[in-house]
Length: 189
Image 1 (cartoon, rainbow, N blue to C red):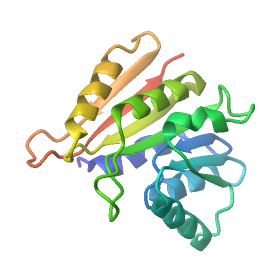
Image 2 (cartoon, rainbow, N blue to C red):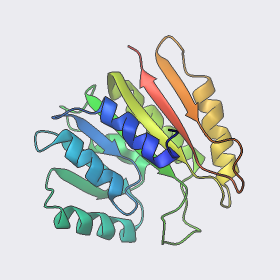
Image 3 (spheres, rainbow, N blue to C red):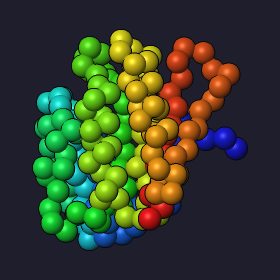
Image 4 (cartoon, helix red, strand yellow):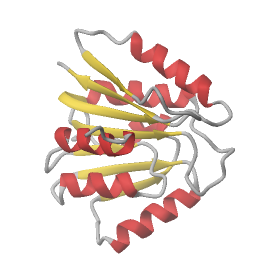
C-alpha cells in the first residue's frame, strides 16, 4: 500500500545505494538515516554524516557505537560545506544522499535548515552523483521559515535540466497541518 514519506525515502535509497558506495546524510539528526545508509553500503562503503548541532552529532555517534558501525565520518558542520569533506574517491562517485529538512526532532525547534544552505548542498552533490542514483529530500515545513525553504527548493528543482535529472514529488494531499513530503532527484547521465 502507500508508504509514509520517511518509509518511502528509505525504499528509494535501498534501490539506489549499493555495497561499497559513498553516500551522504546531509542532516544527521538522531542518526537513523546514517545507520540505514551505513548498513546499505556495508564496510566496503563510507557515509559522510553532517549536522550543525552538537546534540545531533552526539546522538548519531552513540547510535553508531551501539550498532558497532565504524565506516561513517560524523561531521559537525553545515551541509553547505559538505564538498569540502569529499575525498578524491568520492568525487563523481556518490551513490546516494538524504536530507531531512526542518528541525532536529527532540531538539531546539528554532534551529532549522535554511533554503540557501540546502540548495548549495544539493548543487554540491549533484555533479558527483553517479548516473542512476538518487538524492532524496524529506521536506518538513511546518515551522518558522519552513514554507519559504519549501518554495525556494521547489523553484530550484523545477529548473533542473530534464535531460540530466528526473525529479519526483511524493506527498499526501488530503492531510492537515503541513504534512511532510518527499522530493527525489535521479541523475540520468
